[in-house]
Amino acid sequence: MIHDIFIAPFAEFGFMRRALVGGMALSIAGGPVGVFLMLRRMSLTGDAMAHAILPGVAVGYLLFGLSLWPMTVGGLAAGFAVAMLAGVVARVTVLKEDASLAAFYLLSLALGVTIVSLKGSNVDLLHVLFGSVLALGDETLLLLAGIATITLGIMAVIYRPLVLDTVDPGFLRSVSGAGTPVHLVFLALVVLNLVGGFNALGTLLAVGLMMLPAASSRFWSADIGAMIGIAVLIGCLSSLIGLLASYHLNLAAGPAIILAAGLLYLLSMMFGRREGLFWKAFPGRHLSA
Amino acid sequence: MTAATGITFLDATLGYDRRPAVHHLSGRIEPGALLAVVGPNGAGKSTLLKGLVGALKPLQGRIDTGGLTCQDIAYLPQAADIDRSFPISVFDLVSAGRWRTAGLFGGFGSADKAAAQEALMAVGLGGFNNRPIGSLSGGQLQRALFARLLLQDAKLILLDEPFTAIDTKTSADLLALIRRWHGERRTVIAVLHDMDMVREHFPETLLLAREAIAWGKTGEALRPENLLSARRMIEAHDPHAVPCAQAA
Image (cartoon, rainbow over all chains, first blue to last red; front, side, top):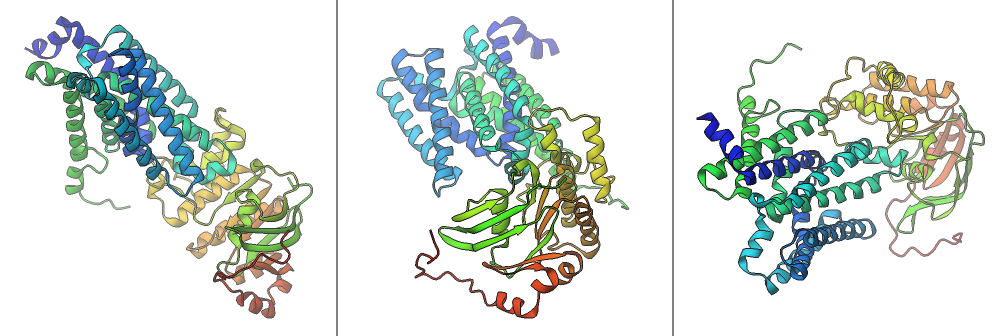
């Protein structure tokens, strides 16, 4: 019984195993990136960037059809361009980063949809928007694993200045010029992970596996290291639950994974040990000191 | 521990959008000085400190810090833009003061940890190591920031209204640290509003009201006629202001 529900789908079908490995690779890299996006009040930046990579993906698709590398390179190019343009405009004009990013991502998204509609059928558009987690090839898995490796390596290097730039940017500015370069490197990591995510989950859902586990982790710990670990765990668990639900209930796999992450978020919000709603309603008697 | 040559203002004008906040300031701060900067709101006190840390380039003239780099200067701004909801412990926040030795990637060894612990004890925050910074009161956070300043081991220490909204006991404790720094021949420049505190603890004072009204021994600088003329400074922008006659 338990074997039938939890083990058999993965034991019997290679595409399920691949999907699980892909989801876990995304979760491992997305955890730390998502936690820092949230702590830097940039949760919606991930969403905007996910839209911004569309025209690059679309151009790759237009020139080479549905093929991994052109679409990946196109997505990276568009994402980096929007991130850097928004960052530069925010620093040299009166516009703040959120306003300039909104302007560029809307421009980018409209361009992307126009390009896709020039040639593609609806099926192709659905692939680009919602991904195909059940059809991950060797190349895609290698790409996802590579992105996870690069992300963890770079995060380890920029961890200290990134923490300081988030908690006390004025102090970092007063002792070091690392703030701005670290911010740009971090944005590049966000783009890298979204482009990785779009192969599996599509541009619209890629950000879900990044932000939902990060937001959940806040309800379990007040230590940033622990939060990152918890976010990774929740992401992996979401992939597992989502894929099983998709298999047994015949649901679309990508959205099922994000729905699972959403469910874990709601549970965390209710029962998380740090200010979960349930514990707030029943806090117990107050302490003496 | 002293800056060899001191700090020199050479006809320095600092401001925003071409309007001067500090106008034609010339003078010298000797190494190891303990200087209070006083003056009405809008007199350019914070602007002066920003100019010293290099966050603001002079509109005209020059500020010569005598070869000090940003690593030699510790700066506590008026309202530190600290995100107090960030999940970081008091110990980790204070440890950032060792940036000069630990830097981006350097290890944080037992000597660094001991130094951070000692700094926490010195500001009266022993036992606060693992507390998240969000749980600190205003005064406790200010103590933590002073611990970070201690760790920075800087030759020049700039404090912008460090005792605003701080109770007398905490002020007295932190003031003792400032005297300790003075004893170690570090240069300390503090923007203050409490005249009694300035008269009691700060040997030198710069009375600023856009221009330097008086600069020297505290007793001299804070004479009633000087304070009166500082109060006459006009804060509002003149919409018809023409370029300054002394502007280069």
